[in-house]
Image 1 (cartoon, chains in turn green, red):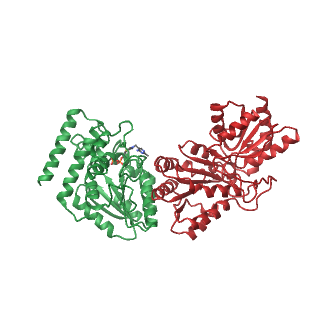
Image 2 (cartoon, each protein chain N blue to C red):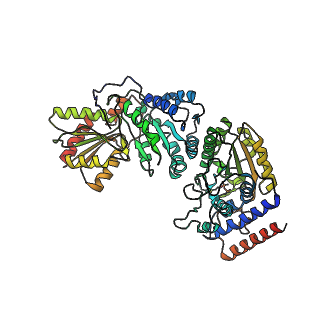
Image 3 (cartoon, chains in turn yellow, purple):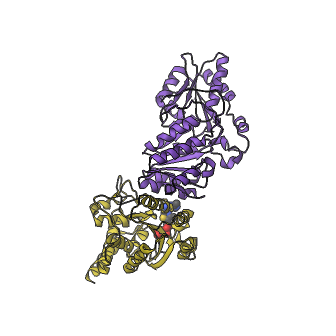
Length: 280
Length: 324
Ligand SMILES: Cc1ncc(C[n+]2csc(CCOP(=O)(O)OP(=O)(O)O)c2C)c(N)n1
């Protein structure tokens, strides 16, 4: 883990937001909302927390990232490109025929992607299995798994957390992207969760709930999670679906296909946010 | 492949699940990369010993098959050779999307085991009777699908599974009370069917697997007594299917009967028919469960009820041969 540097991570988050927009813009439409709200988390993970080797993406001692909400692929492609897993421009082929950058993360296609996701709920189990495998091998690495709050409708999510608690897996951290929205609208209108943090805690996870756009809070929560032995961790990230995409952060839409002028406005706003972060 | 045919229609005193359990126990001792995941059914197939002997590599996922399948895939992603077991109904239907996406599509090999194949689920009844399990696995790209017939054959295929590193595998098997078809020490090769009877006077070929192999051998005896000569092939390897052997049999005998402990709409007969239609259209009759649900009862009753008997094979042979 690198020492915390607020400015550096905020700049990285702004850059990830801009690049995520560019990646999705290359196709013209996609899952903007659920990608953009993870930029701060991705900045902390890839800018300060995780060990990885861009020359050897399958390095066995790396930390793993599993986007169980696989439709957030674009934020991963932007981040991995920025970190040097591949030239960033390659990701501007999102969802084109034979691309290495499909809308949902695919371990066979994209360097940096550790597990294939897309069918919601499944990444929780596979991430947990990977943590178990890493523990068998005596590795010191961690697995990070990102779950959507809508995704948490899936029973499999809770099966996976149950298993991780039963096996006392303290080498995995689950993030729940608590943005309050899923595909058909607010989670409160579909299957209200009461408190996801209370549920996770009741399952036996060491649980923290934080502002998911505050890089300092994210960093500190991971420090706390690392220190907690004998149980898995859950960090509930309170987020705004679409954060930083002018056309998506207002109505928190699940998938966006804005007109070209709206794209131009969003890209300009993201450029400006980056410039401001750099100046700060 | 090297085998001896016993074919006396006598039960093997050993429980066939031990062919799997004892062999896995041995294999896990020799290979520390083998892991085992079960869904609260270790007790049914005698694999509690694995958890006892290898507590760090044999896991209970509990009654949560979807998660269990995902755990298996995740372990595979860290380089483990993973076996995953539940009853055939649940290791297929209950976690199909998980095996499909988290394992197969993701390029991760998991060796799925489905116990209580077809009507051998007997007293657990229709809710527990997998008659489409193998069909579901046939339709996953790169998969291997096996329906071994006895203790010795199950042991032989179990030993080969860790060597398969591409695609998911599915092995359906019977817990106990299987007829011993082969002599101890017999060895089989995945992808190669086993010719049990052949002559140059054969008027038809019976292609069977699992519990239907013994019925096919009985049918052969009855037909011999009537002066009708047929070829008998044990096609435990549904996928990869031994197409060369099948096409040679179709060429030399001109008629085919398939016999399976499975729904005929999506099983061994369908795989055989696919191959024949493409390469050498041949009259074929399908012995098996005729698109029906399972039900409760003794296995012998169920075999009568669904037409899984030597007599059904004999009748089918006559029909197929007459269609030439
Ligand atoms: C098993 C499954 N069912 C349905 C879908 C279709 N789907 C994709 S994203 C989504 C909504 C996800 O909501 P959430 O997990 O809250 O994600 P976020 O709002 O953070 O993008 C749905 C229903 C799917 N991918 N997988």
